Length: 160
Image (tube, rainbow, N blue to C red; front, side):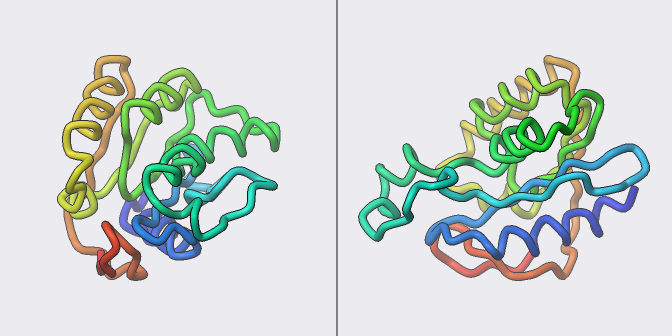
């Protein structure tokens, strides 16, 4: 599979996120490279994104990380996640790592340059990646600029 091309797809989806601080997305891919699901980091369905809800710390409590949103979407659409690959530019906090592990996802592909822009999430992401590796999830960290769609990271526009 071409990780750079799949990451580009994820970045394009991330650009659709209305999160004012950090845009992220995740793909669920089979062994043939077919994208089965593609989501961003939104508020839950039916929950209004009001200006006051988009401000920390309330936004953290009300928004759904892309990785968990992908697993919830797969469940809703009847997609079996066991043995599939998740592609997410910026992954994964400990809570999302738990979801990846419990969903039986066998591989996570993420982007080194996005991880380098983790700022306040460095320890959380390190713990999530460590948990996944310990549980047997193959973690692939793609290293290289890919010329993808610009997204927001920590309120600043960033070009992957």
